[in-house]
Length: 211
Ligand SMILES: N[C@@H](CCC(=O)N[C@@H](CS)C(=O)NCC(=O)O)C(=O)O
Image 1 (tube, rainbow, N blue to C red):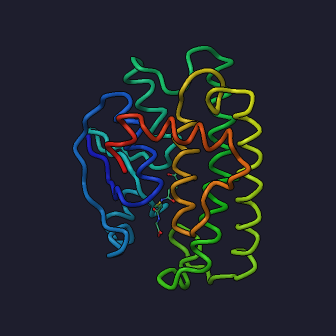
Image 2: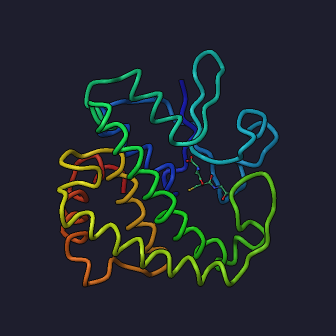
C-alpha cells in the first residue's frame, strides 16, 4: 500500500495528521506538485482527478479524495477512532468536516489560486484548466471571515469542532487556519474561542510531527 504525498500542501497534510493520530505508518511516494508530477500520464492513469493525496492499495485499487482515504483507514484500523464512535458522532464529524472543507479550505483556496502567479490557468484543481478570476479571490476572502466567525461560535459551546471529542473535523479546521497564513489571514483577534482551540490542537504530537 502506498500514499502519494506532497507534505507541504494543505490537503495531504490532513491525511498525514490523521494517520499520525492513528499511529499508522505507510510507504509514501513523493509526488511534487510544483514540478507537475500529478499531471503526468502515469499519475493521471491512476487518478484522473489529478490531485494529491492518493492511496494505492496492494491490489492496485486507487483511492483519491480525503473522504475516501480517511474512511478506508478508519474502517481498516478502527482503534483510535477519528470519525466518532456512534452513528450520531459519525454524522457530526462528516457534517463539520465537510463544512470546514467547503467554507474554510475552499475559501482560502479561492483566494490563493485566483491570485498566485504560479496558478495562472490553474485556478481549479483537476485535469481541466481554468483562468484566474479576481472576483473569486475577493469573495473567498469574505467567505474566510465568515468561516472564522461561524467556527468561533461553534467552539464557544463545544470543546472540539464535532462535539466533546477530537476528530477529523478538527484536523481539517486546523489545516484551514494554517493554510490561511499563506494568504496572510490569521484568526481574527475577536475569535477568542477559535484561537484557544487552535492553540490547544496545534500542540498535539501528530500535528507537531506534520507541520
Ligand atoms: N478534494 C480533494 C482535494 C485535494 C487537493 O486539492 N489537493 C491539492 C493539494 S493541496 C492538489 O492536488 N492540487 C493539485 C493542483 O494544484 O493542480 C480531496 O479531498 O482529496
